Image 1 (cartoon, rainbow, N blue to C red):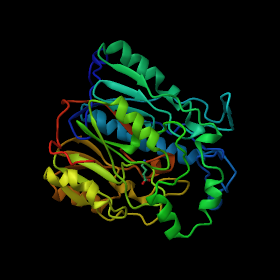
Image 2 (image 1 turned 30 degrees about the horizontal axis):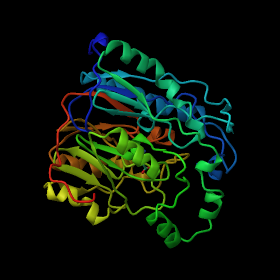
Image 3 (image 1 turned 180 degrees about the vertical axis):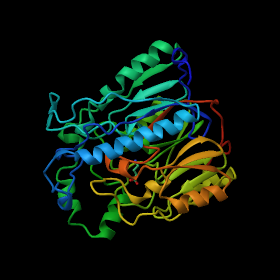
Length: 377
Ligand code: ABU
């Protein structure tokens, strides 16, 4: 294991050799109380719209078993693994603007923590239930700050998430729309968030060294993209949209695998003009394999496309969910050593192998992998 006194914060992309990572925990996760950003509705599993509470204990235990096993696999490969500190997610939280009757959990660090180079950026996202989730990572960030004199500890402006951050009655209206109408709305990025303040989810950002690809989504607004562009002014921030009604996070949609190779989600086609940047730089854009599951796991707000929510350990080695045999086979053929990791039981807690991690240290530096730029993109 890496010497704890020698924490190095350095991570520029999704594929350089991984040396230190945070892996989330499922402890105490809640089906969160309804809020303007999101309403869960799982009548078949005891949580019809409006009802909230802890995920069933046996689900939590199974998820934690798989998370612990994943942590062990990474450690057996010489990677340092740190874990967040869960807090009581059943408590009501409030700010001067609102009350939220429950929090959520701390399984997916990728939703809260964005790491670029030596910078660790805390973000809030758009859910009131997740407004205080950063506290679960504070013990680690304090430790990294003490151990690594070069670590830059940053936080994006905390969004107020007052009522004006959301479109009134969005979800109620959305449910009445036909699929084509929903698609039309999505094309216009007409989702639940307004533009009164910057809001973004780190998991909507794909890192390619000098270039960052950001997906505006139901949890990332254009003001958020603008904030990222100004904050990471040494980088080139590009916006990509995909054909999807309710996008949440880019990491099961447009996934960098190694320099020159990106995996795309065949169920969420990209806009051809937006892929030009990759084409002119001779990147191969490969279509993902068919996922193993036809429907998401019970109480999961993620999609079956978690099949492509992989974690690269280096440009030749990649962790894939163990049931995703077609995805494993495809990556094998593309020249990767594939490490199967059982993780399906974690998916209800907020995602797959990529979501469940935040890579603190990957060997390597900031490179320009897309030197030929495309005008106005
Ligand atoms: N955070 C990844 C979730 C994306 C998806 O469900 O497709």
